Amino acid sequence: MTQHPPEPYRIKMVEPVKLIDKEAREKALEEAGYNVFALKAEDVFIDMLTDSGTGAMSKHQWAAMMLGDESYAGARSYFRLAEAVDEIFGFEHWLPTHQGRAAEGILSTLLVKEGNYVPNNMHFDTTDANIRSRGGRPTNLVIDEAYDPENLHPFKGNMDLEKLKAFIEEVGAENIPFGMMTVTNNAGGGQPVSMENIRAVAKIYKSYEIPFFIDAARYAENAYFVKMREEGYADKTPTEITQELFSLADGMTMSAKKDAIVNIGGLLCMRDNNLFVQAQNELIMREGFPTYGGLAGRDLDAMAVGLYEGLEEDYLRSRLGQTAYLNEKLLEIGVPVIQPAGGHAVYLDAGALLPHIPHAEFPDQALVVELYREGGIRGVELGSVMFSYEDPDTGEMVYPDLELVRLAIPRRTYTQSHLDYIVETVEKIVARTDEIKGYRFTYAPQFLKHFTARFESIA
Ligand SMILES: Cc1ncc(COP(=O)(O)O)c(C=O)c1O
Image (cartoon, rainbow, N blue to C red; front, side, top):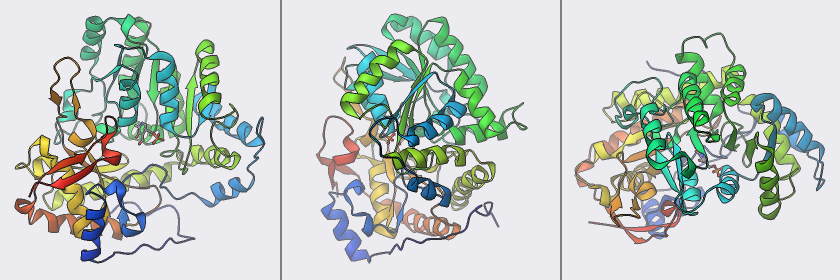
């Protein structure tokens, strides 16, 4: 029997969840315009919408929150967080932000000009939108293996180095205000990036004098994959691996809501003093004074503790074990999933599961709806709703290669029986895929469509 390592914690406080009946679920879907972002959370039984801000904090984090210093400037909480940020990431300058996208927004505002390009292995939706909304062109240059769901490459988040060099030559380094690398690669399956690849990417950016920023949301999960899979790292701790990784970059944007296991928070770090001075001013206008950056003092304290807890080895073993377990079980019942399992989520290949639904009719959205309809499970589509866009040169719609449904596993929140229930629910859907129809928009905003779009079934 496949099992994952027992969780290195026990439950001290519970949050009740309930499965509302089938009729109520159908009504909830209808009222939400078939967009699960518009569901009431209390109508969701197992919430795998995101692993962002949904983790369970430890007793040490809750205790740290009581120490929160809510002074407007120079709070003790800030200095406690500074200690953790300095030790783990080691950048000369840093700023707290309320989320990762705030850090991305500040960076893009300061650096991206109309017609600029920003290469990345794969941009996540918020970096994509932050760059695009300032007239920039986010460009994905991940290795081809990332687009093959069955390919077992150990580091499917790697950048294609040849593509990167050719791209810089083609558009010109002067049109690239900064280059990025997302660890792990959320949009491509939560797949890790090897240290060797990051080192090579850093070298390329440096040779063209392009500042290198890491989108660091899942730095700890990436470090544990490096430890498990990359030669020469088995005896290093996740903290040592993380320190090495960030020593290669000029800065980072980070959502702390993932590997720092807090409900809210982010970071913007950099080495360049000029950029820091400008970023500080932007932060004051949008987020808050630089020693709190849009967060309460208690949030800073929870993050200071969470940054270390996210790097603990027994936690990371259990965390990645849960994802591997769910992936394995879904494969056992014949469901196409991205292989090997990523760090924070399982990605169902809706394009392969529902081949009769074309990109333009959102097969992944159809699967998301079915997961809720069948079992009260909330996942999220990562495909044509989220990533399709109109090409500014040709005016044609560009669709992503993969139509995925992500089931993100919140940290320290669900147990093995919840994962088994998901497998049973998916099995019931698989038995009736022929009946499932596509969707069309009844409303869609220009950017970040998936959050607020409404749909109707093409039945
Ligand atoms: C890779 C990556 N970057 C950036 C973000 C944005 O972070 P936030 O939700 O804190 O704004 C996310 C959120 O899911 C992410 O996964």
